[in-house]
Every structure is written in structure tokens, then in C-alpha cells.
Length: 382
Image 1: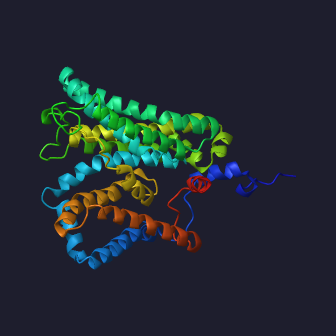
Image 2: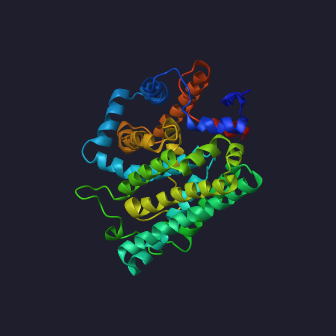
Image 3: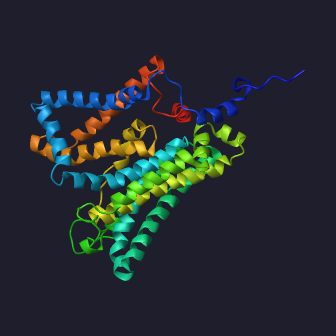
């Protein structure tokens, strides 16, 4: 008498969760049609509805969108677009790392701003004291350490007590934003100007340009980081552990993983990455920081990391689209007499149509969800 071969149906819920991370979510749609429905359709619908809004306001939407893409790509627009992409790609990567592990790290604005404030405030002295390469590496390291320190408390509370990381990361973010303003108004303020801001970094001390362009090397660093972490998250054992944790923390423990240690590692990596974007932006583009300045990059790239299905490589063209929208849209909006805040309406419309498609898609098999199963359950709990 031989024992029957165990099947997946015979396995426990933890084992099924582990197996689920190793196989693509089943769908009857081809991959191309799924991309059209899930990724392109929300963007197109947002542009259509946004066009109707500005048409009612007396602006020709075709001319407006044409100006956006012309200003964002033609002439020197493409260089401004690539420059804008540098911090956006790195912040998007930081969000992807956390979301893949079912961790809602919403402290992105605070991590970015306080790292940017410290780097902008200390860079003139550090760059004047140390060799350029050493100083840049040190400033990058300072930013990452700030992000790690900032992310530790919500990570530790989540790992130790299961505390809701949405609340704790937001609370830490609010404190960090206030701290950044205090630093700019206090120890880092340039006393020679009336507006509260840090000293302006000399152009010769900022990140060098890619030869033949006005795009700083921070863009290259961002692309390299995305490629490296795409490999790590999709091909390495660490990436598999992150996906298992994202599918189910119980499954991770069942598989012999130290879920608490993994939660802290992923959260610190995410927060450190986002803080690093602050250093790249200050040293590559701005060179100084004013009080109460907040570009809210994290809020703007959030829908695009979900449109990319938390795939680092897939986030590149989507964030490029937003960078074109932001770069060309700012000037186009001013020329058309619109507020630049109209661009945020486009982002909000994309989120709205993603929600509609998610709702319909779960009932009509319109491709796999924007959210991994574990992250969706976590979001519902919160």
C-alpha cells in the first residue's frame, strides 16, 4: 500500500501562501491586454477627464497636453525631465521595497525633507573641508543614516508589537518635517539673507553633469539603483524572502525566516533609500533648502509604483511619464493661466480610475490586482 502524493490543496495556509509567491497570479488575459487595462487605461481616462475640466475652464485640452509633452521632451526639456526623475525614481524604489513586504512606510515626506535639510545645511562646510569625492560619499552616508534612524521606531514597533506602521510612520514623518524646518530656521540658516534658508552651495561643488548634458549624475545613480534592486527583489533569495513576508508573515515564520528581523531590515532599507533621494536632490539640483518647502514627491509617485505592480524596472517609464507631466506641465499651466496644482488633479484622477478598475477587475478577471494579496489584506485591516 502506497501513500498518496500530497497536493497543494492538502497543504496548510502558510505553505499555500509561500507557493503563491512563487507563481504568477492566474488570469485569462494576455500580458499585453492586462497592461492596457490595468496600467494604460487609468492614465488615459485621467487625461480625458482632466481635459474636460480644463475645456470647461476655457482652455483647449489638446493644445495644453501638446504643450506639456513638447516642453517636457523637446529642446532642453528632456534634460529637465531626466533631472526631475532622479529623486522620484529613488523614492519610488524605497516605496516598492516596503510595499512588497506588506509594509506601509508612509513616512516618506519626513525622511526626504530632514535628510535634505541636513545635507543642504552641512554640505558647504563638508565640501570645503574634505576632498570632493570623499565629501559627497560622506553626505550620502549621512542622509542614509538619517533615514535609517528615522525608520527604526516604526519598524521596531511593528516587529516587536505589531503596531500599525501607517500611524507610527506618519507620526515620525510629521516630527521630521517640523525638525527640518527648525534646522533651516536655526543652526543651518544663512544669516546673510532675510528669507529662512540654508547657504547656497557653489555650483562647482554640486554633483557633476553627465558629459554633453545638463543632467547631473544623480540620474545615473538612480537608474543603477533601480536596476540593482530589480535584480535583488526578483532574482535573489532576499527578494524571495521579502515576497514571502509580503504574502504572509506567518508563512515567513513557517518557512524558517526571522520575520521580525526581516521587517526591520526592509523598513530601514526603504527609509534609508528615500532619505538618500533628499541628498541627491540637494547636491544635484537645488543646492539649498528653504523653510516650509516640501515637494511631496512621495505622494506624487505613489500611484505610479502601484501601476508598475511594485516592479522597479516597470516604474521607470511610468515615473518618466510623471516627470514629463511635471516638467512640461508647470510651464504649460502658467502659459494657459491654470494653477500648477492642476497636475495634482491629474494624479488624483489616476488614483480614482485605478480604484474603479481594481473594483471591476476583482469581479471580471481584468488582470491581477495592483496590490499583492498580503498588502491588500494589510490595507483592509488598517
